[in-house]
Image 1 (cartoon, rainbow, N blue to C red):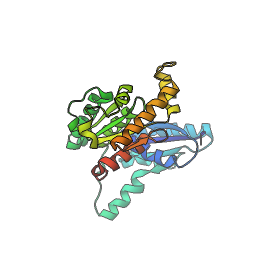
Image 2 (image 1 turned 90 degrees about the vertical axis):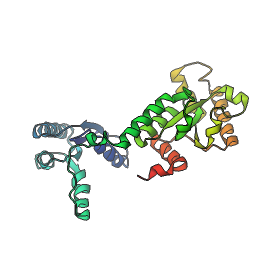
Image 3 (image 1 turned 135 degrees about the vertical axis):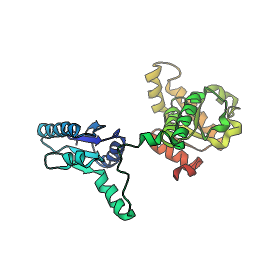
Image 4 (image 1 turned 60 degrees about the vertical axis):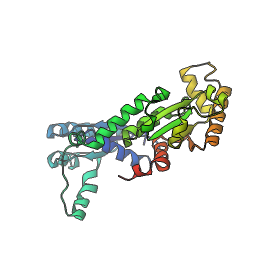
Length: 274
C-alpha cells in the first residue's frame, strides 16, 4: 500500500471525503500517498483531476483509489466514467441516494454547506468555544472557569492543549487546561482556583519516558526534561488526581479523538447526542 496513491476529490473542502476515506484506509496496514483535490466544481477541473489520476495509474502500474464527494452529475460522471483509471468510491451514490429512497425525500444536493453553517448558532458556539480554549490555555487565566465545560489538568506536555482545542473545534466544548507544576506537588493539594470546579476537571497523564522524549525536543538537557524529574511529576500528578477523585487517563498510546470521546462520555455525555 505504500506504493499506492489515494485521491480525495470534492466540490467542497474535501475534509468529509478524506475523513471518511481515512477511517476505511486505517483498517489496512501501511500508509498510501494521499492527494486531496478540493473545490472540483466544474467539468474543466474534473478533467484536470482525471488526467492526474490516469497519469498516476500509468506511473505506478496500479489503480489509484479515489474517494469522491461530488454533487454535480456532469462533474461526477467524468470521474465515474470509463475514462478514469482509478478505483472510484462515490460516497454520495453509496450513501445519499439509498437514503433518498428510504426517506422518500430528495437530498439538498448542494455544493458545500459552509455558508449555511456560518449563520447557525452551533457555528457561533463553536467559535466562542475556540476563543475560550485559547484564552484559558496552559493556565493563562483562571477567570470565568465557571463557564468551562471541561478543565483538563496534568503535567506540562501531556497533551492538554491539543485535546482542549480539538474539543472546542469539533464539539463546541469550552475546554480550559491547567498545568500541574512542582509547586502544586509541594503543597500537596489541587490549585485553589480549580477546587470550586473539581467536578469539571479531567486529568491527563503520560508515560514518563515518553514525556522526557517530548520535553527534550523542546528543552534538551534541562532538568525539566530529565527522566527522573518526569517520573516524579507524573507520579505526583497521578497521586493528586487519585486523592482529589479526578478521573484521568494516559495520553501515551491514545489519539486525541479517543481522549476527547472519553472525556465527553464521562463529563458531557449530552454532547455525544446531536
